[in-house]
Amino acid sequence: MAYQTTVIIDFDVEGFHEWIDVPANKRYSFLRNSHRHMFRIRAGIRVEDLNREVEIFDEQWKVIEWLRVRFAPMSAFESNKYPEGVIFFGTRSCEMIAQEILENFEVSGYLWVEVLEDGRGGAKVEVMSQ
Image (cartoon, rainbow, N blue to C red; front, side, top):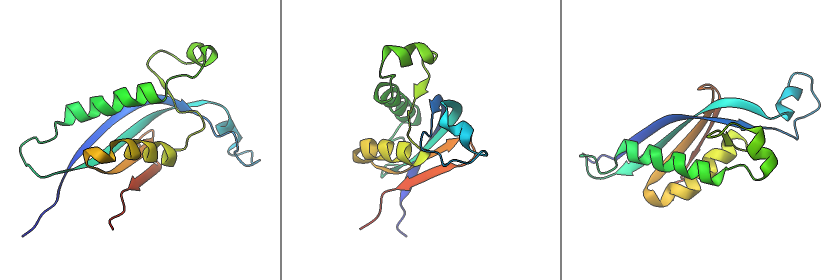
């Protein structure tokens, strides 16, 4: 039998985002303002070696560090507005965040990335097989 093995990383980061183009609807208008979530990030990484070819802790730390650099506050105002260590995703949706992570880490064997708001709803972006 032929198998494909995927290592899964799964961690949370505290972050803010906003939906400035939210439709004029009272139910969703609060999303226009910057609001906080615990973003749950999960990713699948292709491996061949079944004995720790990819160390889960190392991969999680790599992605967290990349997120902190990539989504650092863009101005002094933003730096003062958000607590230290919190990630500001700006106007990006879960779909956009997942795609950016996947685009950056696909060369490292990443096959898919999920980004969930508060561990509930969110998005999954996958590499399409050709």
